[in-house]
Image 1: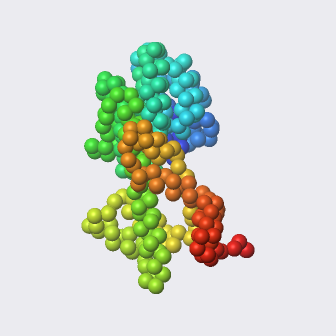
Image 2 (image 1 turned 135 degrees about the vertical axis):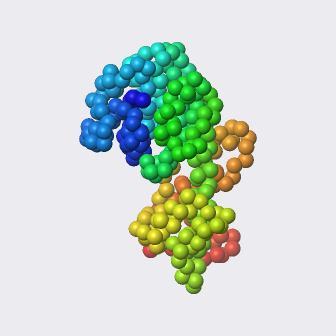
Image 3 (image 1 turned 45 degrees about the horizontal axis):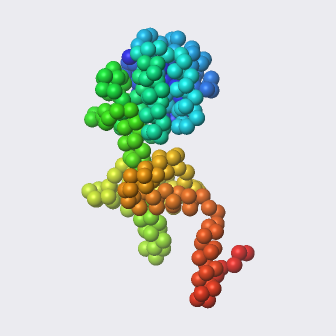
Length: 300
């Protein structure tokens, strides 16, 4: 298939490479010319603008968007909606809020432009092992674009999960679960690391746990890799960002009256990681001193 691809970041460029490797033709565009040239170097055709990208595509035109959620996606979809024609397809493979995807699909429907929301998991390893894809949209549009999903995903690694919005909803919850799993591993390894008298080998233990243990996983394999490079992670600052999906999952759980304490706490722990010093901890220390005379540590 020949498609347009917008967004050539770490995932986007690898997805372009995987598509090219399987014989698809790609017209690539990014805001930075040097990035487009990198895509050209691996076999894509470059585009100077979204209009140029659309003009280089045959009909029926398919444009895959892989840009950050929010305004970048909003602006890209809005521009493409003015350039594409009836029967064309826009695929959003980023981490958009599912409610935005539902709205965008409705807005594009008035122009008879089809929209698909594709939750994409795999990170920088997708080029090698493929991407897990959770796809929302009309069945007939899914069938049209299915050759792309077959190329990008491993065997049994993609599924049409429902109508527009469903793909990004499933990916949102997927990432909420990821938050909780990461937090559990983090807390476990912190406990191991704190037991100084045993001088535990975290790299060796993560390798051991990957051999038949009930907690073995790809994340644990990545932990093994990280500890192999830096046994005590001394080169890394304990500051953890969140890209939005955890917040959205917690908000959805509240809206649906679903208790999700583990995912919620894992999100809040990410906020804690960004504090050089916790004011709430100061309050607790002060109150313990006030009611019980417990010692406090003074700032030097």
